[in-house]
Amino acid sequence: MVRKAALLAFALGLTLPAGPSLAQSPEMQAAADSAFERRAAQLVDVLGGSVAFADYFDPTFQSALPEAQFRAMTASLIAQYGKPIAVEKLVSNDGRSGSLALRFEKGVGTVLLDVGADPNARVIGLRLTGFEMANDSFDTVAAEIAALPGSTGFLVAEITGDTIRPLASANPDQQFAVGSTFKLYILDELAAQVAAKKRRWSDVVPLSHLSFSSMGTANWPKGTPVTLQSLANWMISVSDNSATDTLIHQLGREAIEARMRAAGHSNPSRNVPFLTTVEAFALKGNNFGSERSTFIAGDDAAQRELINANQHRLTLSNVDGVSFAGKPRYIDSLEWFASPNDVAKLMIDLRKRNSPTAMSVMAINPGVNPGATKDWSWLGYKGGSELGVISMSLLGERKSDGKWFVVTASWNNPDAPVETETMVSLVTRLLALAAK
Image (cartoon, rainbow, N blue to C red; front, side, top):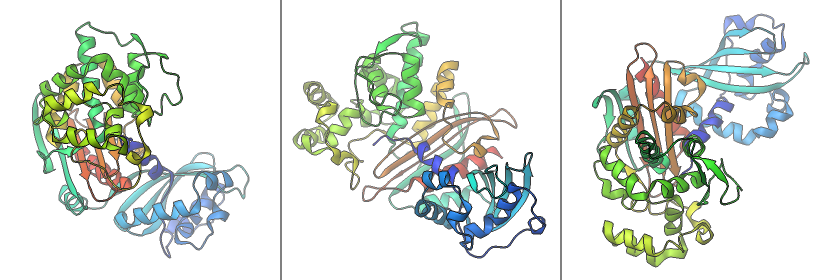
């Protein structure tokens, strides 16, 4: 439900698009002397299918990424960028590892290629680290976002102090389910309590509330002592839900709700009471059908009363798996909500906190492939997803002039799962356009 979109971006960085018959650039027509050059020269044929997947990739690569998955992902990228055309601009210092440019019909991707030590060795690493679209524009990306099934909204804006200056947007005031993006409000309140001397980042607390999708604390015993900063690191960088729920209980649900209001959320009632991940998981499932109906129909006070009265039941042991499979469930009523403008205001509030630690937490995982970060001096990220929901939000300082920007986008579809890779690509393009 609150998985991190960035984790799925990793797959984009592992593979490259496939295509039909391709031509080599003039420089690739020369004889290839090194293993790197030889395998780079074959890349277009591999993508076109005339060189077999198993003959080109080392068994370790094939184990990590089976051919069927490789082909499916490359087909998705071709749909966005067109067919691959040629390999250009080879650079390698050792004849085994290096970079090259892979030209597509709609732009150029930067590729890192690693080959084994043997002269006839196969490829052990292949990553697309950046992509520059030819003649891309905000209008082009906006049209592609608008064409997605369901409802969408985005905002690209320069921020100066409290001022939001939009560069491009669509439905910036519409409320969307945003998944784990809500965790930024928790980080904001934690940083505020540290600034007020109520807490220290180094304070040690027990891991008190266990949840699903807890990558940082998976299988950790309840009660394990951890620092607040460690909880924040896990909550933001890998969207750890046990860390999230522990922080909500440590900081106080009402305090986080007050921080959300102070940060300028336009409709805070959508997130009151501020649900823990386990509470949301449980209410979505079949074990709490009656409570779910009552919760959805109630006002803020009634919803809070229901949550408080059922604290002993809304626990991990009572969550059933239906919350995580099949079709989207109650994404319009049992979720965390924000508009693109709400997210921009939240980013402003976090930046005004002047907390180096909070900023470092946000920058652990930038949410996009490494090539997309090159034009930014600093980049912070949080995303979120569940069935039918994906949201990606970035705050960045542009390297060329030191200006600050917010890039945020959400896509909701109550009828079917959304395509994470598509959103990652679209947001990466918005970020690239903001960097210009």
